[in-house]
Image (cartoon, rainbow over all chains, first blue to last red; front, side, top):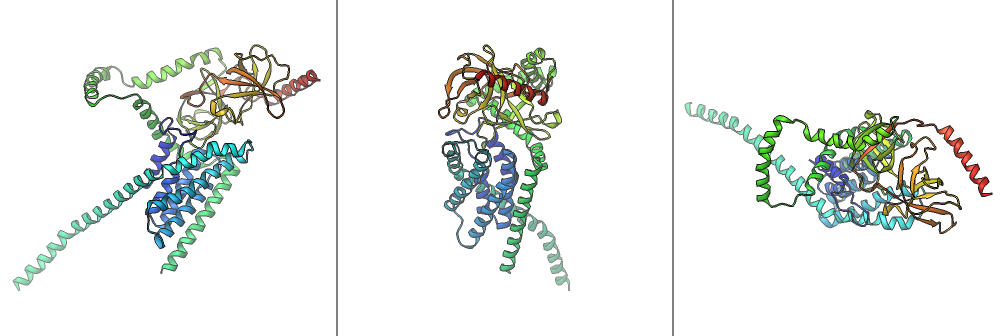
Length: 188
Length: 295
């Protein structure tokens, strides 16, 4: 389910003219997606989806693979660990983690694609292009969080339904054997 | 038990980070990765579908009843047409694109071209680069020029099996040998950080006594063997001077809107492609000429 969600976000964020451009920037939907998934899952699972989101972002952008995954994997792993140990999962902390990961991921892109290439006007370009992108990415976090929550709940509901179905399927045979035993007992 | 679990998590986490760093190192060293090839191969059809759905849905603002009525009418029409035409839409679209680019092929018989559609615009790209639906399977390779019927758009900067990434002329990495069609003043057409957001380029490295005027058309020189000669880049909108070293440059407005281009043509082969040595020699000679002129 989450893989499909990630795949859909990847398609949506790259589709031309679909998401409106605000201040020359578009959001990176996969960053809040990774953080939101981590809010509902266990640490290793969160690490896996963080890494996956990072790899997909790197595929979309091109260039060096894996650096975004390190950032998202780490943030998601610790988010999930701390959620399980100390803090009860809620949207405020997801917003906090989303802010941290957005700043880290987008600033990394700035470093790789802009700073290293030495295009000049660093601060000006960061504030006009990258800062709005960070804010936009952070601003869409609640929407992504709600969608991820729906996905997570649907998945868990389906899982429960399947379990109940399995129990029901197993139940008639158990009942019949019990009734047979009861009948035998009555005969004797 | 909990401590053991935590240790396991820690091991998994450390291993993952190490693996990712190795992957990053390998991809950085090789400049190519199989993961990207595989992922783009999987995602390309879905991305294409998303683009076409977005294209069709953008203009519809009708009520439900109107749509139902239209739907029933269309159903009747479709029943009549289906028997006659099977892949009509696809053929029509392909025909339109080919007709559009027929002129390019007709004027330049030495060109080998591949018509492609834009399937993705990465939100991380600062200079409006995009992904097209053709890759190495269609004989596209890195540095192939990308054009439309309105002129030069950019070049192929990354190739996967089924998709390729295009860097536009708006990028400061663009260095295209260009000249004013009227005055024959040559320079380098390149992207500029201050102009890229307005969709403009600059013609830099032009001589101080140039005769370039606003309204002049700028074309490629073909020097360097990367771009074919005489491809239109854009129109000069104004002449200006660098604020620090007062060297002159011309601002060019491309005929094609590089920020929202939809379908493009990749020139996979042309006469004189990759003739770098000769080109660099001529570059040097032109440089020395200009030096001697300035002296």
